[in-house]
Amino acid sequence: MFYRIQEYKTLFLRISLAYLFYFIARVLFYFYNSNMIVIESFSEFINLCLIGLTFDTTAILYTNVFFILISLLPLKNNSNPLFQKVMMVLYFSTNAVAYSTNFFDFIYYRFSQSRITTRVFDVIENENNKATLAASFIYNYWHVLALFFICILFWIYLYKKIDFNKSKSKNTFNYYIFSLLWSLVIIFICVIGVRGGIGNATRPINMVDAHRFVKKGIHADFVLNSPFCLIRTYKKNYFKKKNFINSSRIESIINPIKKLNDSVYSRPNVVLIVLESFGREYIGSFNKGNIINDYKSYTPFLDSLSNNSLIFTNAFANGRQSIEALPSILASVPSFKVPFTSSPYSNQKIQSLVSVFNEIDYSTSFFHGAPNGSMGFLGLSNILGFDNYYGKNEFNDNSLYDGYWGIWDEPFLKFMKSEIDNFKEPFFTTFFSLSSHEPFYVPEEYKDVFPKGNVQMHQVVGYSDNALKEFFETSKTQPWFDNTLFIITADHCNQFWYPLYRAPINRFAIPIMFYHPNNSFKGVNDELSQQLDIFPSIVDLIGYDKPINTWGRSLFSNSQDVPFSIHYSGTVYHFSMGAYNLVFDGDNVIGVYGIKDLHLENNLINNPNVDYSKEELYLKAFFQDYMERIIDNKLE
Image (cartoon, rainbow, N blue to C red):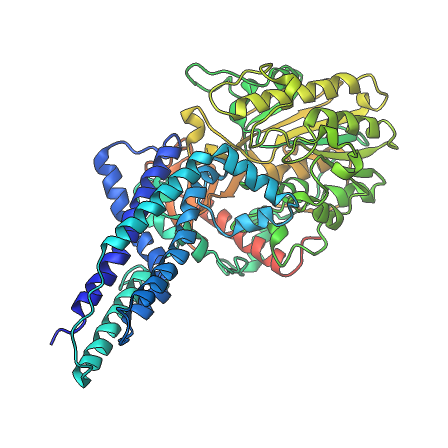
């Protein structure tokens, strides 16, 4: 009566192999990223792996859907060796591709601090040296590629050990009825697995659900897997209007349209320097108030410049990628689940620092040493309205090309200085560095010059810091220098060494510094600040007396704007304000933590004595206004 039992057993064993190798990939993922994903005991490790089975099930069943369906068909010749070889090819052609993304994530996670999603394609879309970058990745992380092939070969070996035994039958009516019924049962079980459980009636399991299953937010990325994250973010529209509160209340809560006063200057030149991957961790002057054992700074020049600058030591990035930084910094438009510049709404008029400076007759320019168009910066600069764009093409000397990303920072800063010397004043110039980046090389003449420290980033940070020093030393003799306001910040963070900066909140910790040669900006400010605040702060300092659209606040204004910070971790939103850090899934607050609980370990959401209603109201008002303004083209 029980027809095809041996065939179903074979199918079960073949699919079970995928679970085994996903477990191996999870162990390896932890091995490569244990400095960021802290698991305190073996029992906790095993428990998290069991939680991960839910997400593994979805990824494995999606990947093997055709293999499973064909295996369920009551074919007469399914035991034929040729047919079984074809099935094996189908099995590994899908599983190997999906499985490889887990291995890519071993390294990608170090730099993005989140699991790989389809947003990675937005990041590399505009790179015209993809082959070079891929070759560099393989060369530097050959051990990851080797581990992948070892796992695949072992997987193939085990697959071949599973015998396929054709069930004996006379192709009777009962045989086909039994096959149909069991196929329906198996398909039903698979649907439940894909959705993440039979009780999840409202929607399939998603990335944010990882936070619902784990006790510590830092473990969410561990229980996820890369194929699952890619599947769940494929062709998703993340811009949807919300209706949390009455729209008439938005303005009174978050004040999105501001009119700022001229706090210091009327018409200074402005040079905005965005340093690639310069996390706050690397800069000693920004860590004097932190208790960090055996701390070492890798930025002697910035430390020196800080003594004559106003520095903001509690500042945060609003995104995790370079492509997300510029809209946040230049226009106070953050990116969350996908880069704003890669969204369908990016090609609209946007009020920004560029439009403001153009309106008051500044000359505006953008400098980035990568091939023109890299990161989508050329397209964004055209949308924002920069007068001139200077990239690798304009530098026009490939002898100083680093072989991967663009022109080394030091010669490109010299090039920028020579161009600025000929600019008509007043001018606004933005420089985006690139040398402090993977694969972490420095020019041959600087080999062994800068401390290599504890992680690869430390040496290249030293190089870029020295490049800045050379730029300032040569620029200070020029007539334009004394009337120039310099703002120095970073796009996002990168590798971490000290435990303080491995915390989920501090993975977005960056510097913000204001410097003027007349020493009018000095001191340390530890109020909460973010990239969104740079646009209104600069506008506040140049005497622009018209209203601006900004979700940030001026760091120099006496207004009642409340300090806050927001970013998307890769699975959830982190919102900091007042006494609390809120964890938000896009619809509901799912975690409440003390403002000092940077590791998000003690969830206070069920504590009746904790009142986070003010913070939640502001968060939802901001989120609702953000979606509405972007979708309805109201950023101008």
